[in-house]
Length: 285
Image (cartoon, rainbow, N blue to C red; front, side, top):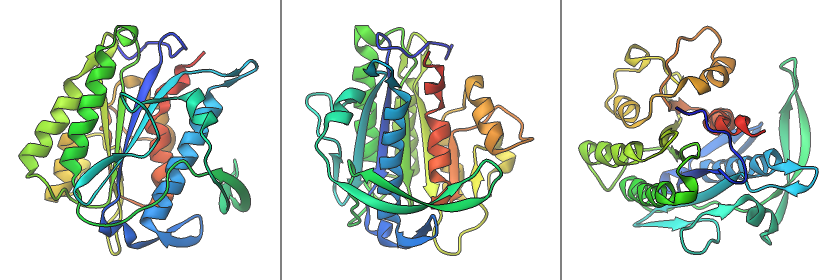
């Protein structure tokens, strides 16, 4: 299980859920710059989309290794953030061809030795920030389950590495009690291809004055005795062994099996967590 090679004939799918509620207007710091959480998360998702394109680049051009959907949830609605037809998935090649604006950004680049230097990049703006209203997370999970289910049911995907759902949030759901959230999460995790069940990652962003971050714990003994931290842990998937190397690179000496959850994560660490979440793409030949 979880050994399928990702090719043009057997793509995998990423569904990214992005909290766009009013609390995402809170200030944070990304690469030394102060900005809203909403702006930081949009920047990081755009970086991730650019990275997925780079992983798909070969001498003969861009290969369609990934089907990608990004859903934003805030207020009373869940909206697709990438222009797509039908099932809301966008192929890698379509992502490249989208006419989107660019923005110059100055970020801190981490060197191999751990040092950091300023770096200027021109970033494509597929995802634009927003922060307003409540947090309809359960509705977003239901939408993700519907997308994931239709993708898994397609005959062309039956032998593919299963879909990966990444939920990025900074607060609790406003539209459901914990039991209903667990049921929505279990529905996603019950969907499968012939290579394994879909994987659900939940990444909670730190707010002002929050405690120590928790990233990919190896068991419940690492989870703080807080109701919401425990809920996110229970909602998230146990990670198969193919992720151990990527997690251990971020957490040397930790003991697998790991859980696909982060709690009180600094925004600066979000891209690293998403890189682990999309690490299955390292199987691309």
